[in-house]
Image 1 (cartoon, one colour):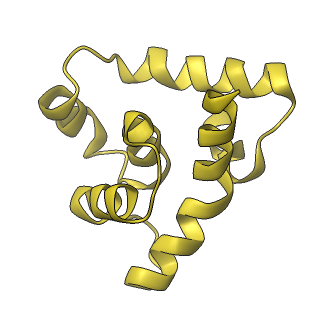
Image 2: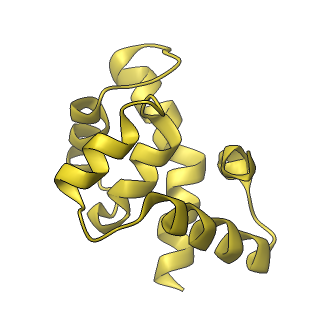
Image 3: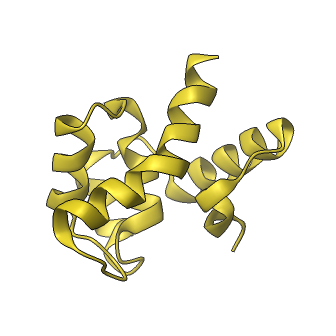
Length: 98
C-alpha cells in the first residue's frame, strides 16, 4: 500500500512541485530532482523513478551507475510499468510506457 501511494505521489505531484520550484523545463537536473524529493516529502527510495521521469535520458545511464549501481534502469522501468499496469494507474507516469 505504501509503495503504491509513494509511486502515485511521484506521478501526480512531483512535476508540479518541480515546476513551481524551477520553472517549466523539458528535463530537470539530477540535483533539482534530488533536492525536491528530499526537501518536499517524497519517499527517497523512489528517487530513481524521479530520475527516470524527469532527467535527460542521455544522462540517466551514467547517473544511475554512479548513484544506484545495483539498479538496472531497464529492469527498474519495467518493474514500475508492470506495477502500475497491475493497479491500472498511470497519471503522468504514462511516459514510462514509451
